[in-house]
Image (cartoon, rainbow, N blue to C red; front, side, top):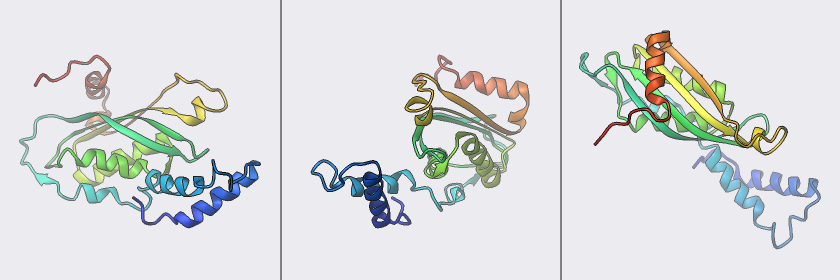
Length: 196
């Protein structure tokens, strides 16, 4: 959890928010809410101040013997929209064409989480993930596809419960239309899955 979150200050702010909406923060139902929200925010914003490069630091040289593509699909994604402080959640699909280095597969979800666990917008998040991989691994190409539903769309305003936003960030060889289409086909629902 994020040690940088001032839980006491968050709890005091939530208490004031409850008063501002006309609720009684001292009621039996709400008396523990400020502390609960503070703990939740420490989780939601655990990526504030975290450098995603730390998860790519253990990259190993591979001397061109890597195969053509590394793709990790269906990385669970949870973030908080910076416009309304409402959650958005979905999946991240991260692909890269290795250059001279690869990283352990667990690094990819860690990079996604570090960048998602802060006030964020989906469009920027995809770009930040792609840029982190470019900086940390110097791959030949990167493709990041994010699919998410947003509380600011589903729970307020237009209330489109089934609406899902899809964003794409690409770099290098995976920005080329044919290469990008090939990876998108591997990501697509119903794509052939590897048999174990």
